[in-house]
Each structure stands twice: as C-alpha cells, then as structure tokens.
Amino acid sequence: MAVINLTKADFDEKIKTGITLVDFWATWCGPCRAAAPVIEEISVEYAGKITVGKVDVDAEGSLSQKYGVMSIPTIILFKDGVEVGRQVGFSGKQGYLDLLKKVMQ
Image 1 (spheres, rainbow, N blue to C red):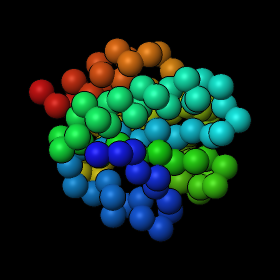
Image 2: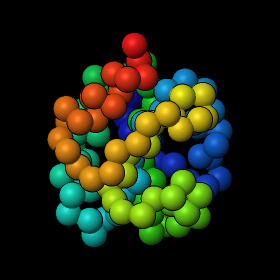
Image 3: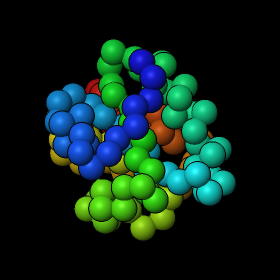
Image 4: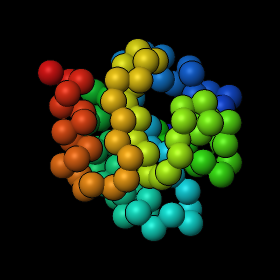
C-alpha cells in the first residue's frame, strides 16, 4: 500500500480504525526529505497491517495546530483515532519501527 496524503477533509475518517502512522512534513524541510523514503519503505513492509499517511503542514496548518506539531518531521501514531505515540525529528528507520512495535505487540 502506498503512502496516502491526508487533508483536513479526510483525516478523521482515515485514522479512525486500525493503526495509522502519520508523517507531518513540508517540502522545504531537509530532515523530512530524508525521512520520506523510510516512510515509504515502512508503508510497503507493513502493508495490510497499518495505514501510512502524510500531512503537508503548509497546506494543512489546521491539522498541525490541532495536534500540536511544532517542529517537523513529526510522526504521530494513532490507534483507532487516538494518539498512542509520537516522535519528533528524524531518527532513522529503527526509531520509527520502535515506535510501531510499542503499539503492535
């Protein structure tokens, strides 16, 4: 499954069931560009198990505000629509996998 782009219009609907990893990012953000291929890999490796989405903070500022995203990249993990984990900054693939493991046990 490919990474999906999330907007204010569909965000709540897309995260309401199951596990969803959401990457808050921007095109001008260097660490976000470094994280992008890792996010893509995770979406492939966990296809059918989790949903992976991206929120462009410039286009969807209200979502950034709603979830208190102050710096990017910020990864927020949701389970059935509720935030269950968060990681600010890019710490490599293992950091994201560690976040996922806490929820998927």
